[in-house]
Image 1 (cartoon, rainbow, N blue to C red):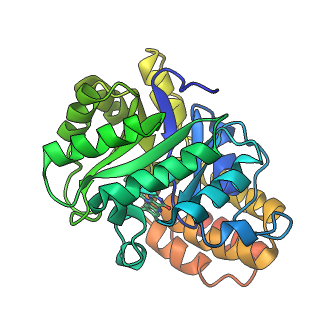
Image 2 (image 1 turned 30 degrees about the vertical axis):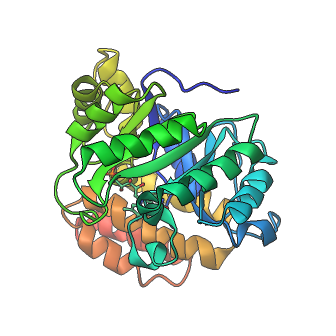
Length: 317
Ligand SMILES: Cc1cc2nc3c(=O)[nH]c(=O)nc-3n(C[C@H](O)[C@H](O)[C@H](O)COP(=O)(O)O)c2cc1C
C-alpha cells in the first residue's frame, strides 16, 4: 500500500482542468507529489471505454488519484473497482463538491448531510479497493459546526479512509470568503489519519504557513496551480531553504500546454481545453484578459499559437 509522502504537495481535482495535459505541464516543473483527476461520475465510469474516453487519459499513473462522484454505493463500488484496475496511486471519494447541479442528486457535499449514506458509500468503495489508498475530499459541512465536522471525519476514519482532504469552507460558502484554516487544525488534532489542507494557497509561503499553522500532513493546491504550474517546485524549494528559481517564460508555458493537449486529446477537445487553461495562465499578465479573449477566438492550434506569439510581441493584443 502506498504511503503519503511527508509534507505531501498535491494538485486538486478540477473539472475540465486537472486532466493529463495540465498534469504533464505541472510534472515538467516538478515538486508535485500527487495529482487528482477531474471528478468522474460513478454512473458513467463503468461504461467508459478507456480507448475513446477523454476522461480516462493518463501517461503516468503512479502519482494519480481518480476522484469519483456519486451516492449509490453499488455504482461507486463498480466505478472504484474499474478505476482501481488501472493501477492508479489511489481512489478518492468526492464529498466536497458544493455545486447545486451535483448536490441536487445527493452527490458530492450532499453526502455530508447524510452521514449514514456517506458511510455506506465509503464502505462500498473501501471493500472494492483493498490494495491502494482511499481518500475522501470533504468540506467543513453545511454549517460552522465543528462537532459535526469532527464526527463526520471520525466516521470516515472508522470506515477505512486512509486520509482526508479538507477544503476549509462550508457548503454555503461555495468558493467565497477566505478559507477557514482553523478547521484544518481542529481536524488534524482530532483524527489519527493524515489530513491534507486545502483552500486559498496563493503563493509558496502560504503552503508552508498552512502546514505550520494547522499541523496538516500536506497541502492541496487548486486554482493557483493552474495560474502558476511551477508553484509546487517553489514550495519544495522554500521548505528546503533553497533560493527561488527564475520565473519560466510564460509564452513557452502556454505553448507547452497546447503541445501536451494536442498529443493527448483529439484536436477539438485539445483546443477547447486550451481555451479553458489559458484563461488561468493569462492571469499572470497585465494583458492577460485580452490574450485569453483573443485565444478564445482561435479556430485551431496553429492560430492559437500565432495569437499568443503576437500578444507577447506587442505586449497587448
Ligand atoms: C474550476 C474548478 C473545478 C473544480 N472541480 C472540482 C472537482 O472536480 N472535484 C473536487 O473535489 N473539487 C473541485 N474543485 C475544488 C478544488 O479542488 C479546490 O478544493 C478549491 O478550488 C479550493 O482550493 P484552491 O483555493 O487551492 O483553489 C474545483 C475548483 C475549481 C476552481
